[in-house]
Length: 429
Image 1 (cartoon, rainbow, N blue to C red):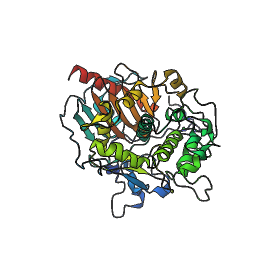
Image 2 (image 1 turned 30 degrees about the horizontal axis):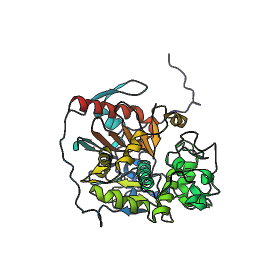
Image 3 (image 1 turned 90 degrees about the horizontal axis):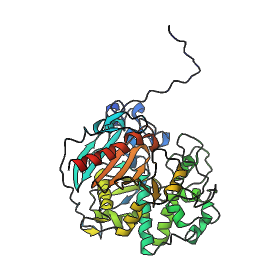
Image 4 (image 1 turned 90 degrees about the vertical axis):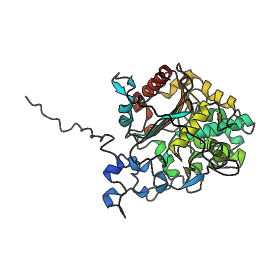
């Protein structure tokens, strides 16, 4: 007998899979000009909505103002560093069990399941797997979102090692404008490890969460008619109120990265992009310039505005796997990389509520697994990742445009895939 439908029960929308949401197949932004129903514009406010995001994340510079992170200059030779190829055909069949549901999946199946736009795997310094989909190509660039934070955290840690930034100092020592905000009695270290007590929600499903107000202030989202709130990232930071105590536990909040970006600018006299170019990007021998989005005051979005080529992202990951050494020189002090890899308090990390990351920690805006391979990573919403496995001598860089933002919802088909591949490479070198 047929059951009566309860018309008051909402029906969950059907989310198109990777094939059906392919931006080229759907015709987004194709034509001169594109038809109105295929047009993606910043002003509409929905350029990050799925499936438009599958085009937008690979074309961010057409939507947001940005500033250049040069690949060549006085320091770099201008010649891209070598990325030797040693492609392997056995990786797509590597099998693993997903977290929670324990469903079997292969590496090849996970590529589409995660709405991957591009993925590069390096093993022992050689590219063994490289694949692209959607609107991303090997010559294109993609939004890194919160992977940006790990770049900012690394530069901050390098400045601490240089003696230019005191991680025990209170924030107002460098930025007096934040004295009356929740950052007024926070230390640089608490900001770098995100153990600050701040009234700021990172809940992407809550339209009233402060993350959206932050995005509007910085121009990542359009400001509605009559908007009278903060008009820049720095203005927003000065309005942040306290919630809880600093130093008692880890709570992931993007605004910490914007504060660290401001600190970098104060102690060096350079923007994050200028410093990244001089100290890392040029030295890596990157193929392409990187870019970072800016607000209407020209301030870079240190919490998530970086846009890079995927091969250059894997170069950066390989440099970290090499303990800071890459392209013939020690780019980052080995002690700085070791400090990141060693991690921080696992007990404090529990307060962050990351059920898919048991026993992890967070140090200098990097995520540390403390697993059997000492793997650690940089993470960004919608599936952006750099995953470094020292024991397997493996580095993975991935760009994606998953319809879900939070990585806890993506981790079940990502983290076990990375670890399974690492074990496969150890067993089958």
